[in-house]
Image (cartoon, rainbow, N blue to C red; front, side, top):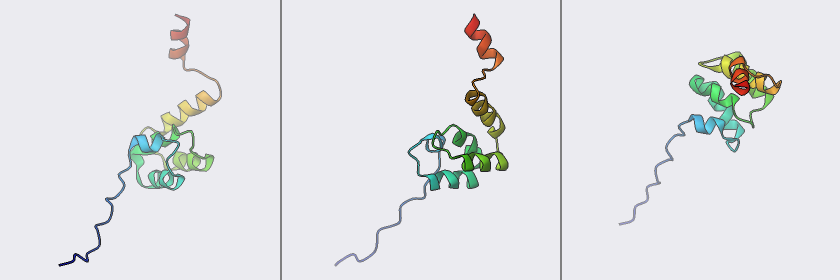
Length: 91
């Protein structure tokens, strides 16, 4: 007897922080994470492939740790260091 059934579908994709920070992650997946996974938005900020539009969307949507992640990104981008890292460097 021949089994004519189709194979089951692939399991759904479960987004992770590693996926959110990986520059090789497809941009459409990054956008899905931004829209549907508030707990992972802060990790998208650390992704060097995150577009300015994606970062703007994340800043508007917010989520746990998003504000701090954006502050760190902006501080790094402007060459500023926090006072704790400056004092550590001098010691």
